[in-house]
Image (cartoon, rainbow, N blue to C red; front, side):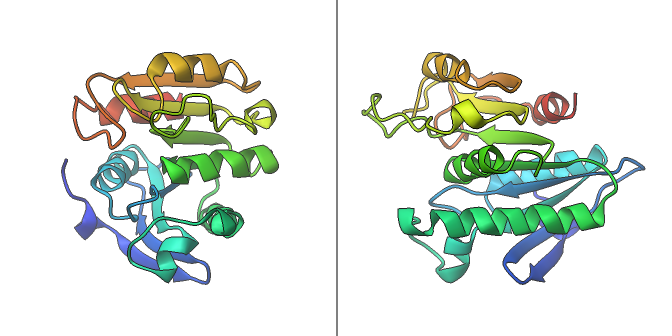
Length: 212
């Protein structure tokens, strides 16, 4: 994936730490993107998506969740999930101050799960969701579904999911999407696992799915 690290500016505003990719062209919209449990905002997929969206006229803030701001490695704790959601809310509010248009919220794996919970808790906070590799259940434990908030999720959501993701098959995810009252789209990535590193990822298709 192409790097866009040299085309962005650092952001450090209270609870919000990350990098801002200013939109190219005249479109006025914003997107907050965050990472999974094992990564940070410099994850290659997030960098590539930020570049693609900024070229399409969307300003993108790649941000570290609060748990990652406290330590450089290691997974989050369930006890800090609420703080991570508060950090995402602060990021959305910051981006909304920077744009006159819609503000979208997205995340990979854990970050996407917290983004979706936040949207369910606060309808209207963001206009649309971009959920990359949603962790539907722990690997090998399909009965432990992470869908309790789906019934309250009315924000339109785009799910990008690898067809060999051990955190949930595309068939399992498609079934779970029926629980969501809001509009949903599913973009399967053939042969890709949870990290979405394998398979052909069409960044343009992801941009189009979220924008249209």
